[in-house]
Structure formats: C-alpha cells, structure tokens
Length: 364
Ligand SMILES: [Zn+2]
Ligand SMILES: [Zn+2]
Image (cartoon, rainbow, N blue to C red; front, side, top):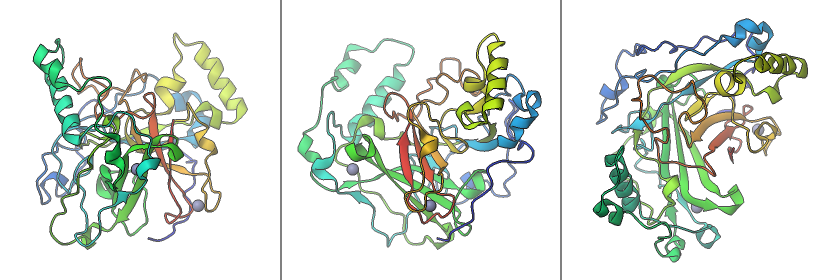
C-alpha cells in the first residue's frame, strides 16, 4: 500500500452525477463484471437510480457548489454475486494463502441475544415470504422468541469476521484506495464491542485483484452473531450522486442563507433532500446526526478523516426523495438486515493522508 496525497475537498464546479435520470443507465463496461468470470447474477449496473433532486440547490446558491462532492450509492438488493462482483455481504476474492481474520475479544464482547447465522437466514426468509400478510402460526413458531439467545459462552472462541462489502474500483466512481489497488474489502466481527461504542469491529483490506490467485476460499462461519450485524448477501447497483455538506460544515453566512431559504419552503428540504444521500454509499459526506463525526481526526497524523463507506441501516428512511423509482411501492427500506444503533449508519472513515493509517468506524 502506498500513501497518496490528500484530495482537495472543494471543487471549482459542482461535479456532475452520472445516474440521475430515472432510466437505467448502463456504464459501458467492455466486459460487464457479472460476466467476467465466476458465478454471479448481478443485474446491470445502474438498474437502480436516484431521482433528480426536488430543486437544484447549487443553482440557487452558486457559492455552495464549491463545497459539493460526490458519493456512489450502492443500492444493495438481495442477489447472488460472485467473488468477481462488487457486493454487500457477498463472497470475497480472498487469497488462498492468507489466513481468514478472526476476532479474539472473547469475554470482552457485549453479548445479549445471540443467534446462529442459519437462524438469522431462516428468519429473514420467513419474514420475506410473509411480506404484506400476517404470519401463519407455523411461521411464528419458527421464529426465535424476542428473548431467545444461544449460549453466551459461544463467544469465548475466536469469531471469524463476516464479509460486509467488496468494492471493485471499476464499478465505484468514488472508490478510495491506494493507486495500485483495485479492490476494497470490508469485514467486521458480527458482535457488539464496548470499546467500539457497541458496534461491530471493522477491518478493511485493499488489494490488487490480479494478485489474488489460488482456489476460492470458503470463509469459516461464526458460531453466533448478533442478528443486526449479519448482512444479507446483496448485489449492488452503483449510482453516483452529488452531495452538499451538512449545514454545520458550511461557513456561517452561507448556512444562514440556506436556513432562511429553507424556512420559506413548504417543508425543510436541505437536510433531508439536498445534502447527504442515505443508504449504503462509498464516499460523500458522513452522517453526523448523533456524534460529531466531522470532528474525528486520524489517530496517526491528526488529519480530518473522510468517509470510505457508509454501512446504513435504512436505504432511504427519512430521506423522502431518495428512494429509487425502480423499487416497488411496498418495498422495505431495510434491505440488508443490518441495523446500527437505533437505525443509524456505521461510517467507516479513512485518513486522506495515507491509506496505511488506521481506519475508524463511527456509528451516527
Ligand atoms: Zn469481536
Ligand atoms: Zn493519518
């Protein structure tokens, strides 16, 4: 891995999103990634898109454009991606000669309701099949009770990390990583860590995919997980959007003018519809609604950190206008099964001064 210089945050002109129409927009790969080798049944990239913003806020406040950045929304949806696909919760292209990572926190985990991965998958399948109707008695009986837990001492052994996301640079316009790497893999320990603010403990790997050789690696399965920390296997549909900073990050005078404009709207727009996109995304601004995320600086060098990946609880949630038009009207915004805190995002941050500096994960 090599250090790379920080990228300037402000752009002289607002970046143009690639996928803002409601029509699917293929990206023009010479060889589509889902045909590039292994399994994989990912629909075409761009199959889910972000509707145009209700207003062009950059046209109303031209001085805001200099603070714009882009994010790549992933739009994860259940699927069967392969190791050569970009995915959430899907199989990782893992070197056969590299040990799978484990968490050794044992009794330092906070344990409450533990489930086996098989129970989590079975419960999600039952609930998905029953969408739009009441559960049958048999289905209800097959779900674990609200206070059910596997024995707590099952965490007193090394816990294999689970795949959270695998991003190929070719698919993600806002990919961040060392210049010579084309693959980012994110894993986490699917249990609560008190010293991580009761979040999963995250690990990231940047790789050169061409260097990964050998037979496919079948990862070990954790004996137990916290239900909310086991991502459902999803294909992704990357979609680049423009984001503007939270008002707290803008100069006071600009923030005040935006507030005054917002007060004249039928309902407030800036925070919910114009600044940060919700859901899983690479790059863009981190959500800081709960903790002061923009105050987080690199532990190694003090540089303000940037968002590498947001692992979100909800794909649209309160963001009324962000829901892709391709989703059916009754679609659930809780797509991946992941829930952080009370429905927050886990913001995985990196240091822009060096990819060798430690990442940080903040729930907000
Ligand atoms: Zn752990
Ligand atoms: Zn640093």
